[in-house]
Amino acid sequence: MTNAIRTVVIVGGGSAGWITAGLLAAKHKADGNLGLKITVIESPDIPTIGVGEGTWPTMRTTLRAIGVSERDFVRCCSVSFKQGSKFCRWHKDDPDDFYYHPFDLPQGFHGGNVAEHWLATPGHRSFSATVCPQETLCERHRAPKLVTSPDYAGFTNYGYHLDAGAFSGFLREHCTQRLGVRHVADTMTGLQAAMNGDIEAIETRENGLIEGDLFIDCTGFHALLIGAHLGVGMKPMSHVLFPDTALAVQSPYDEDAPVQSVTVSTAQPAGWIWDVSLSSRRGIGHVYSSAHMNEDAAVECVRLYLGKDEKSFGKLNVRKLAIGSGYRETFWNRNCVAVGLSAGFLEPLEASALMLIEKSANLIADNMPTTRDAMDIVAKHFNTRLHGLWSHIVHFLKLHYCLSERTEPFWVDNRKPESIPDELMDDLALWAEQVPRPGEFGGPDEVFPAASYQYVLYGMGFPTKPNPRGIPDGLKGFSEGQFATVERNASRLKDMLPSNRELLDTLCSSDDV
Image 1 (cartoon, rainbow, N blue to C red):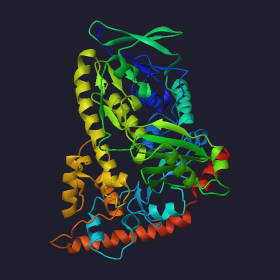
Image 2: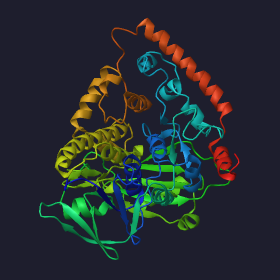
Image 3: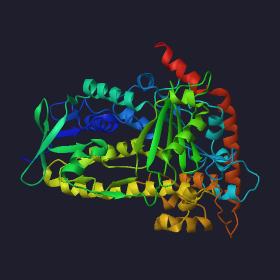
């Protein structure tokens, strides 16, 4: 079998390279004689971008799969616990305007569509507070678990905030010391192509040629393999998602400030500001459209958000990043597959970057071709699934914008029909008549369930019509029972769970806890 797939070469480290290496190595026994041989070529001359500091709950599954201790991860990567996202001033430019997209599904989600009853019952609290305890907990900065809870287990669903640079180093050490991944600290200087057009080997400055059977491009925006060499183009999404620039800054905590249990996203005149609470600092970023705001005005938005005078703000290092949204026309071409920023980028409104890396890496690992002859069919299936995945995320991100009632030009432009994908327009027309139902979201790669759409729609005041047939008595009784359960759980957990900061301080203080 001369065309057997035995060696995988990952070009580029960072979160994309090391998450991919870890999942492939764990699933294909890279530390054994019969497993895949996995090499990561990581240039010491190229720093990681260092953003992408929020994860989905899927990261718990990923870290468990590759054998990472959660406590070690928390200690080494400035981790805090995240229970969802809070969107401030998105519906209206009002200080009291906010809604939650929590990680927990609505109580009783698989037993009945409680959103229909909530809509028909005036006077209820916000949708998320009615159907899920996490809004109540996050408003009080509660952690999702106790110090005695097992690794990756909690009373509510949770992901993480993390230091992206530290995370890469943490994964590198784990993959090389525990999973048998070979690390080559060297710079790619070129590559060699085979007669059939495949990539045959990577040329490096110090280690010469590094051959492989499958090459994974994790070289970030440079896309040295999939783009520069193979010439696979991008499918731009700037006509749907307008923000194309980000200003990122790290800020220390004010004294005794809480560690937020959510990513806070606050709408601005031409975009929004993220606020990520790590255990040791805050990560702040302003995502905006350069067609609607100049850089000086965008920087001023960050200063005002942080509440700093010009002198103290001037001491912070503000980095400017180009973040135009789009993704590859083909993700897997010949014997090369793109993962991470080389595959594309979508603004970090729902923290989808690390999830897309996890999803891609798992798909590669689960469908790893045994031979080169099988690879093109595997690649075809992979590309179909990834295109659907990226497209669904674009539509979900756009939903946040097109429902806003803000009056600045940026927000007005986001409501124009020509900027809204046809599929999303059809969905909005459907949801004006009836609430999103789980049956609409049954695909294997549907990452946002009906509940996610409900949280955004009804957080933004979307006017779904009442069911003309009325609410069945069975659903009324079921929903009222679920709402009461949420109230009891919220009351119990807010008193039982520690604050995010208390839990993190305890986890990081002693090996004996």
